[in-house]
Length: 307
Image (cartoon, rainbow, N blue to C red):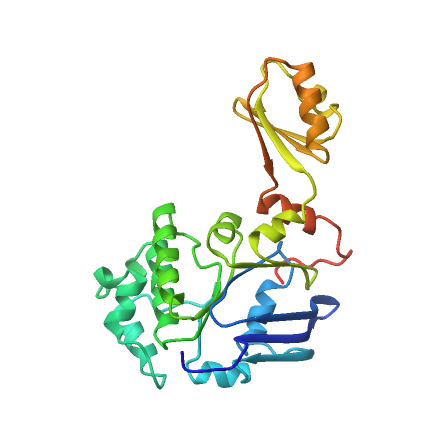
C-alpha cells in the first residue's frame, strides 16, 4: 500500500438530489483499509450516485468525501483508486493489451501490463479485438483496466454482470488475491449470494441512507425470526399459512419454506398437523430475507428508479 491514512473511504453527511428526487440523503460511511465491502440496495437506493461522487464524477450538494485523506479527484489522479463501472465502453477494434498499456501509462506507479492481464484472466485474449470478446470477457477487460493503476482502493459497480458461474468464482478468487496485502474493495451488486460469500461487511442503502451496516451475520440477524423448511406431503399453502408463528409460505419443488416469527410454535404445530413431514430444517434468515425486510417500506411517492 502507498498510503497510511486510517480510512480508505470517509463519507460524512453526503447529499445529492436530481431535481425533486433525493438520490443520497445524509449518508455517512467509513471503510478501513483492507475491507471488502458490499454496497447493496434496491434500484433507486443511491448506490450508483454514491459511487459517482466517490470517484469525483458527480459533485455532491452537501457533505464531505475523502479517500485516504485526499479529495476523490486527487486520489484518482494519483492512481490510488481504480474503478470498474457499468457505464462507458471501449472502442471495439482496440485489444485488451493496448487498453491496459494505455491505462498504465497514465499513472505514476502502475502494475506491469503482463501482470494485470494475468490477474484479470485475459492474458489469453490480449491480442484479440475488444468487440469480438464475449460479454464476460469484456467485463474482465474492464477489471484489468481498473487494476492497471495499481490501486489501493478498487471500486466496482456490478462487476460480474454477463459472467457465468465459473467466471464469477474465478473473478472473486482473483479479488481475494488482490486484497491479501491490505487493499480495499467496495462493490455494488444485485447478486446477493456474492455479497454473502465474498464480503467482509455489508452496507445496505434505502432511500439514499444506510439502513444496515455490519458483517453478513449481523445484517442477516436484523431480519427477525427463522425459516422452517420441510417436505410436507399433501399440505396446502393455506393450511400451512394458518399455523401459529408462520408469516409466509413458499414452495420450491417438493420442499416448503415457512417464514416464521415464532419457529418453535410453528414447528410444533406442523408436526402435530402433519406427522408425515420429513427432512425438516430450521435456519436463520439469509441475506436475501434481510434485504427484503429492510428495504420493503415505501420510501417516497416520487420515482427513484435509476438513481
